[in-house]
Image (cartoon, rainbow, N blue to C red; front, side, top):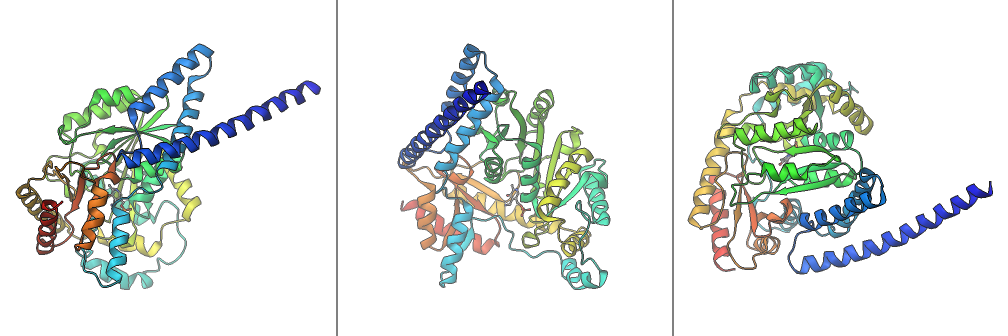
Length: 455
Ligand code: PMP
């Protein structure tokens, strides 16, 4: 008994020492964060993390210690550093909230920061809102969604993407954001790694951070037309890598990957047994050849979809996930735990919305994107002409340009834009969204043009 007590007291000592060291490490991380902020650098430095990772792996070999445990522990430490350095990150959402607050004080603001279509949901939505009470969709329901709705979604998806999806492959979500949160939190464990191709909508990273999952960012560049390098992705994969997230048509760049490159990524995922989380929320806004990940019949694909952009139903909070039924079962358990089921009346309304023809929305956004591209070209901004989605991601070619400062100053001039920093290490970029009518967008681009000139 005295032996076990002795060992236990050693364990206590080590644990206490580790906590003290963790405190020191966190303080240093905070200091580094301040220095990076003042120097205008992004939070995560992949090269720096990689060099530490290599040191840890070689230490494990030297000590004959399990690499997987050590690198998972390292991932925990790296994520903690990211958390202490992320407190003041400005994204399109923080600019949106500031714009809203200025508006409440009477200021006129043109919203080119958020991806929220200004047009209304289809007319049938209005009718369904008034009939849902009598239809009786008013109570608790099955956690995966109303059976008729799942059936209708399966048919809709099968027709749209020329695939064979059954209702058992569908999980109804309260918006795609929750679908993504559910997939990351359910299918990954703390210390696992998720590959994200940047620039990226910030929620993949934030959901991962919340789940204790380490994000490995693959930075793409304007010069490479936002195309990731297969070699770079391959080099990033290790035994802890469990998922890669894709988002094409892309927010914020508007990029659609050439099909060959998309296929290479899928092959890589299959070879390494990775989940593919494909956020296809902008599929309605694809203006060049685009193929859903569903078309590849890979059993570890998870596709997230939504009514927010296609049907302009952002406020309804309704979306869905498509995957193999064993994955759907796992995701559904998590969703049931969090929210029992998605609101039945909203599901009914979304089911009716599927009957509407939304082709006009596609054409409207396309015209607006063309207008933004024309104006951005006139202003000599660097950007890749979007293949789809609702955005232009433009670089402002001025020394020391800081998108966050610029976006904040622009609010005073009556224009809200999204700073590039919210999407990764893209400080000298801004994202412009094509979600207002042409007249308003023209006015917004004129304000932008004036202010780019006078920086
Ligand atoms: N994915 C992407 C790429 C998005 O841009 C957004 C919203 N801007 C979402 C998901 C979230 O959509 P939802 O409203 O369905 O939660």
